[in-house]
Length: 113
Length: 114
Image (cartoon, rainbow over all chains, first blue to last red; front, side, top):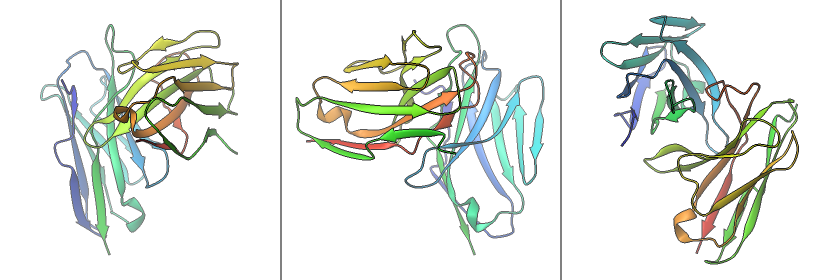
């Protein structure tokens, strides 16, 4: 039972445009969400996080939006750059028995020059 | 600034062989983790250690054992490898003992079991 879902395995975006990566979750107890970025042959690296008490968190070109009622979060990258080409994982945690991070399956983002 | 170091980077085993994956972190982190990544499955937690001297099972612990040797090192052992354990293994660490904190990952071990 996949509690964190990334329904788009891949996404291609023109350089300079906005990239929007989506993530849905089913467990209403989740209260902390993170995005990780992974390049080939490297481990994932932390990108940005958001707590359920907020609905938006911004860090430079990266913004994460959280819609608790829809159990949906999204990562916006503006403007997209070639170095943003990577696999992006969302992760969630929270609630009794869910202190550990649960990861989604990832979305491969390709930025087209 | 090494961060989290995993060895080996690649390994091929025959079914039934054993091996140990090594992991060390130099950030003085309290918690350490072992994940596996399989196509279409995301990252799944195998075992974790919230502090030196403690280890706990994650989502997919069967067929694995771990040792938290000291605060720096956390090893993962496959006693009798099976083809289903073919995967990419990642070690990670986090500063505190809250398990949802930001994780720092190693570069991974690509393991093939024939």
